[in-house]
Amino acid sequence: MNSLLLDVSPLDVSPLDVNLTDAPFLATLYGVTGLALLLVLLGPTGVRRAVVTVIGAVIGAASGWVLAWFVSDVWDPWGVSLSIGTRLWTTALFASVAIVLLNLRGQVRWRQVVAICALPLCLLSAATGINADVGQFPTLRVALGLATYAPLDRALASGQGGTHVAGTTGSTGSSTGTVGTVTIPGTVSGFAARSAMVYLPPAATGTKAPALPVVEMLSGQPGSPSDVFTAGGLADILDRYAQAHSGLAPIVVVPDQLGSPKSNPMCVDSALGQVDSYLTIDVPAWIRAHLHVRDQPNGWTIAGFSQGGTCSIQLGAAHPQLFGTILDIAGELVPKYGSEAHTVAAGFGGSAAAYAAAAPTALLAAHAPYGALGAIFVVGDGDLRFLPGVHALADAAKRAGVDTHLFVSPGTAHDWHTVDYAWATALPVIAARTALLAPDAGALTR
Image (cartoon, rainbow, N blue to C red; front, side):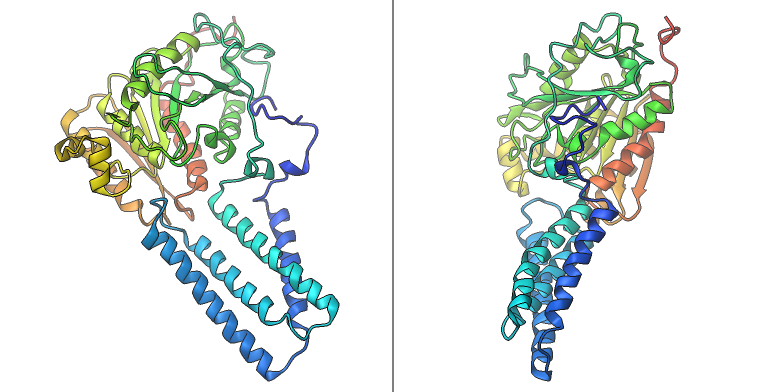
């Protein structure tokens, strides 16, 4: 497919591209690990060994649960509570390691070899289980950071009359879109952003493309723009939608709002970076100059996940003259950069009033009543830390006169599965609000 421009031919499936979250791979790995543990347990038996093994497994499990609790709820390095699934995998890992270590001695040589091999298998199974729970690394290629995308800067023509990408066949000749990297300079803001990503649906490529709606999508923190396509699988979701709608889907531009994976300028103009200006002046100017998009606010959507979701409601609420629709996926109730004191000092020059005014609820109230703004909020039902805030933001949007939709993703938490659900659920709403399926007359048949 030409939507993912990776260093691998779509016809040459490498072991690096085996899906790490699919049932066949997981079942095989878990089966081999379970067999290894069973062989260890079926070694020398006895009441004493059995009692010691049970006690060790219980202590190991308790240690794993406590460690997950400490990392998630005390240390809290990511600002996200670990899901129940991740906590259970951590618990299972510690329990299984305890079982293996307590049964190493007294085994015949081949069982000792099996026991030693069981240790990395347990670790791999737990890591793969946690990854499947979060959805961060769909393939080994992505996990190793080997997934790369071709640059589109030279291929993109001026937006006048259609977006032309060399090597494509036009609006109706391809069933998949195109993804690549672009450079969006901070001409006005001076913000030093990393490379951005662009998704062009089949209808956007060629020389007779219609003016399409555009989505400015923001990834979370820590992270990078490519996460939206590697972990989020957004190109596949958009391709499926386009295939069902004559090649039509939104153009999606994913700029960098962080500057580096560990930075968090919080999408405001501050000493940390003029990010608001970058995302609302520089990026839109680049889009209009290089892509054939609708020019009115009703054709523009600002979207994001996690920290990017916070940005989306901040920017959408503050700039209704630019964005007509907001997609907030598991965003925060307020922008955060560590503790509240550190957030105020680093991002707002020590002004508590400026910090309070930048809260999405305050922005919504300050700009109310809205005339045509719409907002879509999505959160996982297992995302206990973010769930109340998303509900509060949806309520605040309704009070401000925003056309509000709230969707709760079943069985997911603060993870990429929620993002998948969000896009699949929100696309019809975005399409309706942006008149996606009613492009400029005759553009697809000229």
